[in-house]
Length: 283
Image 1 (cartoon, rainbow, N blue to C red):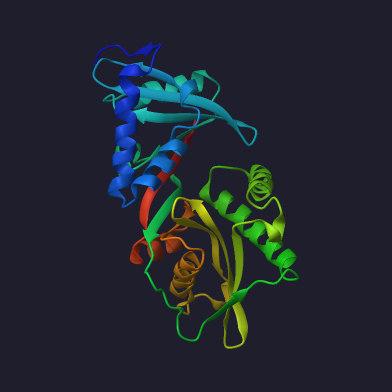
Image 2 (cartoon, rainbow, N blue to C red):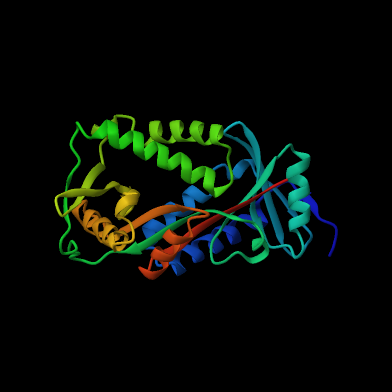
């Protein structure tokens, strides 16, 4: 391998990078408008990335503050054996951990623990609610109790994924809920549901219609712990499909945190494709 050198411009690299990212999203079944929207998200901050090459491939890296920690990010890596250089660069620039966003498999980062995945599937044209399950809108009076439980669950998921401390997870939760629900129960585009069976509320759902072109984002499809193991998890996914069509969208997307193997198994069995996978290691 030739010596890796930092380069000043992105002209020789950027077009190829964008084409590879788009190809990954198209292979996952994204429509062209959705693939373009996801590409735009993937390119956020690209002008500040540092680019290096050994003449055979590329390395794109950067650092940013995230919940009080300096985080290194490897945005692209096509240089054989270039991971060590990228990790060293991140460490030299103050990073306490290194993150990667992957499409199409772990590749050189198979030993990085999975911290989260974005998954998506096109929904049935006329999805039906499971027999014995009824769905209604959550009431405004129920919202505060739902919010408290949702926040606690979100913090626990972040900590279980292994990337943040409980204190950092609480800070991230506060920021995320403020960003996605600035008007609380009345935030436009968001819908909240209660799922009932045998006269009991067995879980809740929270979705955001029009999150991306043709896509409803499922922030939460939660079956309460005392009702798990009864097939309601798969039923909740059907509710997500139904809610997607209620909002006029064609596909459903959501995030699952690393460490939640039960949920990942459910999503695999119900055909939800991995769009992006996020992995990281501590330095």
